[in-house]
Length: 487
Image (cartoon, rainbow, N blue to C red; front, side):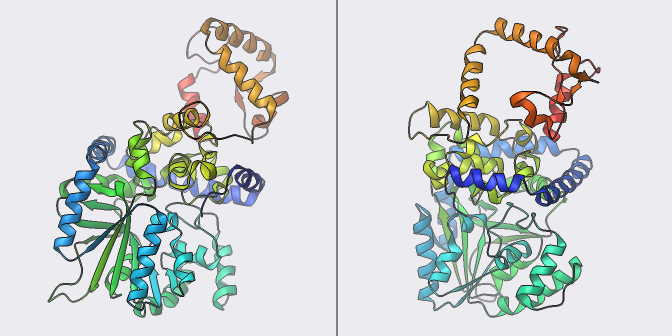
């Protein structure tokens, strides 16, 4: 899905926010994710230190990206892999379609790949008369519904097992069932023929090791291995940021990626690809291609603040932590990359006119930074992008969603915030005025423009006693910030 501007986002987010059933599904899925993550972190004492190591490796990789990509290309080409650097989405699509047409491909099976969603590959293949079949179960489900994924890791997070049962009954002509095992069996049976009769497999790439020329794919269903071994041609698509220096670096990422993304110790399948089938090999493609995608990433690299977004592992954890995403879901963002990470990468990948509004669609609560496995400072980048798009150099965006009174209030606050003494006085006055309405340290109902907040949650009563960090109920402001970020 490609962003289509602020008006479409505003309309879609309003519809999603009013969908109580969608809200319930997203909250349930997010709650399960954090339960699994908590268990995974508890049993792995080195989790925090591994995050630090992984971040340092990504920082080093991004700093010498050109060198590592050249090294990766040389290693792969020595083994017969055809490497193509695509400047933009159109170049990537054209190359892949041309490879398929030259080989007479009629059917393509696809492993899960956000990069192919980014470049809108499936419509291009279909337009060329080539059947493109998503084989990841979640991707297969949303493809049957003719809609894009709603989440980076769990594409069908917005659907219940009952929804999927009805979909399979309608689209596949099977009897209705809401049993997950039975539904999985139906999908497995339908996809087996697709795997065996496809001439081309297309996958993404989770990591590319420059030192050894190894492409690494992690997944949980085994469909990725079918896509890379059964068809005669394999095409892998990766962003330029996926390369890491050494094979020994890989373990640090594997330790944290599965735990952060799904709460597992390790993904069920981790595949290491070094080239096409060699003499004596029992399986594997006879022809292998790697498409290395820029599509705006070098613009991100040139920005000393925004380049940190290239550290992203595409684990999807920031989506699960984000109160905005958990309320409106992925489709409202109108972008292949929803949630906090999508808000900071989409303007570069899809253009400011289409996605420049997304950095403003955040509460800046910081929950995304706390959960990120490589500690990307997403709130800082969001503020940086807001500045660039309103006051900084380059293309500006108009933010039409905020009413005039909100913009006026924000401007007044910005001026007042320059004077700490004035802010302290205003804070104490506000606390004294609100004290009669507080119960147990919280305001259950607030007047005027603040009433929207207390319709769905309580507001912490401001502190008027002048003791930094103290709360009337004995808690601390730090604890309160943590509590709010989890709501």
